[in-house]
Image 1 (spheres, helix red, strand yellow):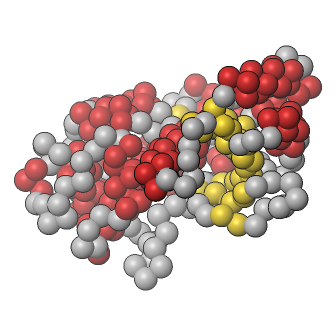
Image 2 (cartoon, helix red, strand yellow):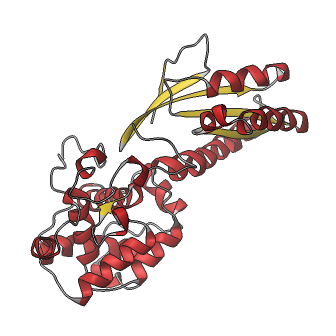
Image 3 (cartoon, helix red, strand yellow):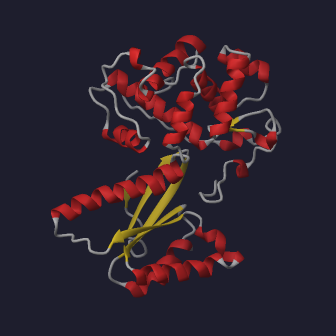
Length: 313
């Protein structure tokens, strides 16, 4: 995620989010010009080229009242209510002093936390939570099987049971229980309420997270700041990079790392396959249309669309 030059005559900031889908983002900042609220919101919601619109607003009662009034007028009309998808309002404490180093430090952390919560984990990362990670860890089962099944479903879907079992080198109750858990937590989903399974954005991010953990475990001398930030949000403590596998039953990160290795050694599924060590990428574009055919019942764009999220294109 980075800034680029948006239409400066219209927006204050802009960037392009690359994960699963290319999502153009634009934003406005309101500090002193309260009379411009209606115009700012109108500009944001009617911008047809962006998927995500952020509005950073000085947190005053007058500002909140004007924003609520403006949003209500769009929300109550059927022809404009859908325009609010992708709009996020982020309030900024009104007594922020830009000349104060302490205020600037606090504001930097505040914006980082809000953008992470509202935008990254709330939209781009598929709404993955600490609870999801804990349920995934506590489920148990053979080490590596859950990641192997999730990766195969991400790559090919679960269309034909015997073929899927052959691919993941597992069958019977352990595999059935793993599929049930992955479905219940939302890492995979069932098109048309069938026995088939296709990946979700949350499940894809879990794979990306595990993939980067394993890569940094192998190649880095310390966890990257980005990965530490993700661990913090998921309420996970970064273990030492030289930690051994003996702690897999006490530490979720160590369990994930051990499971990634077992997915390859026990089930033949390598999560790091295709990751270039010299130019690593841990995400990919999600081509949902490959599942939208007659082989997967009911697998259309609505299967991945969240009414509170952003429309797929």
